[in-house]
Amino acid sequence: MFEFLSDPNFVQQLEILRSEFLPAAWETIYSLVLQVLFSYAIGLPLGVLLVTGEKNGIRPLPTWLMKSIHGGINLLRSVPFLILMIVALPLSKLLVGTKIGTAATIPPMVIAAFPLVARMVESSLREVSHGVVEAAQSMGASAMQIVTRVLLPEAMPSLLSGGAITMTTILGYGAMAGIIGGGGLGKLAIDYGYYNFKTFVMWVAVIGLIVLVQLIQTAGTKLSKVCDKRLRNRK
Image 1 (cartoon, rainbow, N blue to C red):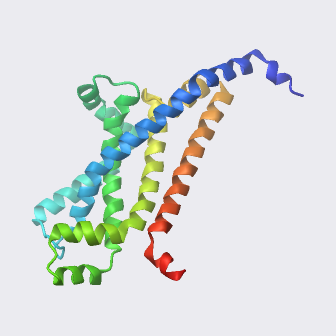
Image 2: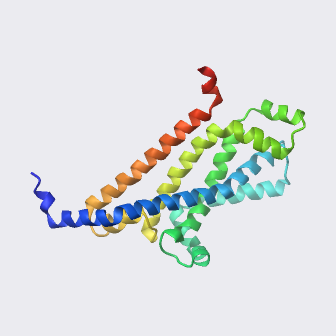
Image 3: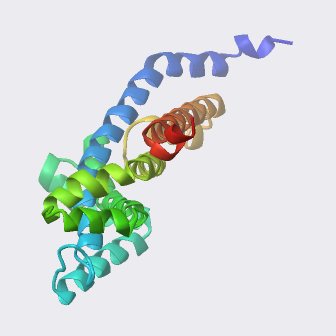
């Protein structure tokens, strides 16, 4: 019944997993962290501008500028990820000195992810009650104070839920990046599972990605509930 355990091909796959699974998982995790940090460094301020800079916002911006921001975000979001990644590889060569490997995937991934972050942040901030913002304005709060002490704190549960969705989306992008030389679990699954027919290696890598997605989503959901004042007030 367990004769497959002594099969040379299966033993070889176990050896591949023993030597490469943990390094690939680490590459996936640390690249995910960097990609999320850089994506939010760009996307969070843009998302805030999309809300505060509109015509009736707390700090209106010129119409042409707002249209340019919206147009640029929509343009980047409409380009398929793999095409965007191929187009952006020269930027990786310029910034990190290579077009292959985990580091090379970070610039294209950030370009693909920050528009999603901007839209997530915009959607979360629009859920904040206008009455709360108006109350802060009537008390003489500046635009920056309203953003940092009213909008972002009030929207925190939604921002955390959106952050979990963003992280799982970036994780999926990273897995696809293995097709064109990216590292991590995606590369492990594609190189061994797809190109070399090591099915067991592929499934273990896929299960590893699924576990990461579940952990991220569960943590995001729990943190969102902890920060939700409406749920705390019901207790």
